[in-house]
Image 1: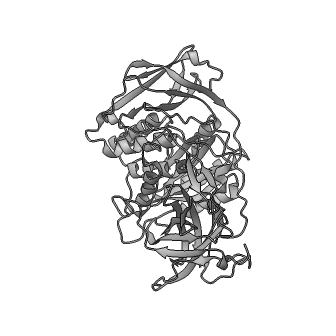
Image 2 (image 1 turned 180 degrees about the vertical axis):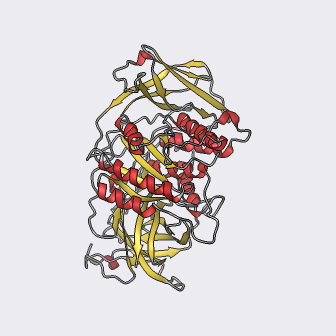
Image 3 (image 1 turned 45 degrees about the horizontal axis):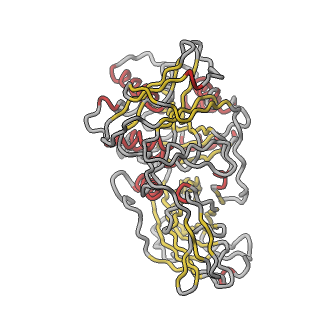
Length: 536
């Protein structure tokens, strides 16, 4: 990549941000929602209950192309003693939609040992990559540490129990950790089986106290679930979310009790698309109080678990035992797919019931869906053809929207020398106004060849993409944001080459969380990174 400055030209222009970037919830949520909408816009992208897996994933593909509503549900079967039941045939399962029997179009049992996520190929300090997306196990486990409703003693108890839990995990079982820290849900540790990294991440968010002198701003449970779903929807396979909290904020998850289910319907749709099961865990342990408010909190935990195919844990000591119980059975389940008979798109709630013959079983599965046109695909997918400079053509994958952009990003002080003198990063937003206490940093993006769909302009291949970064402090408050549109003009003699560009951002000193996204303005294909970063 020597002589990069001579290889292509970079033009910066003001981006047209995706709809909703500064809208209803907050920039972090709206940026994520906007990306999700960009990825799913159009009938060809409103597909399925399961996205295509990454090339090396062991997860089976359930991509179905049909004009009917597709319903996929993962069913965990246990006997009366709580032991996983294996080896049940398809004939033992019966599924009902609003009490009407349905035909199972796809059936599969999953019973695999936990597998590790291949480590990122990047080892340079303060350099991050999402290349792990290419090597994912069939089931992913995610922890959400929600301290917004926990007292300081309860947070200390959770920190102790979580530490003990990490010590007992199988060595090859990876986790990711998110934290709800006020008005944001932030990734503090991406998927790893390194217990030291997981423990360090948990210590960054526990104990957590709101800024003094201000009432904390806390996102709703629906918004929390939306954010988690949008983040995890780019990953294939089933995901189990272990949600440690001090009781949710009394927002019902039972569609039958809501007169205007708009926000609830969106949460259900996104959770279904991302194939997420929620496991609420009351981090306060065994409670002697039995107030009406506590009973309502535990009822909501039950509703959230039942609605998504998970299980609720409360009023018990030993949080690590609850988490271990979840992870010990997370790879053993049955996947059922059906297309509802006489489906009508009317936004109404459909209750799904599963019955299994042969014993007195305990079942966990997603209990229904909204008939709002979600997870439908009425248009056949067509391959896209790109015309190259020499007159040849290149066929692009038909599922670009569901194939994440794999890239590397490093965060360094401005004007820091490149570790590789042969690689030059072209800046496209040099002008950044620094406020008191801020320091200028540069995000260097490295993208592989042909990651964007290019087109001919004046007999030269051009590509256009947008990049954005949001920065949050430990309290979950947004402290800065940058968004830029980049146009790349490739040289005639080398139209397919890596792209290295740099974006400046002003950051305050302290432990921060950066949310970075890149998306192709032609295809809607996107890639994201969440980075825990300490600014000095």
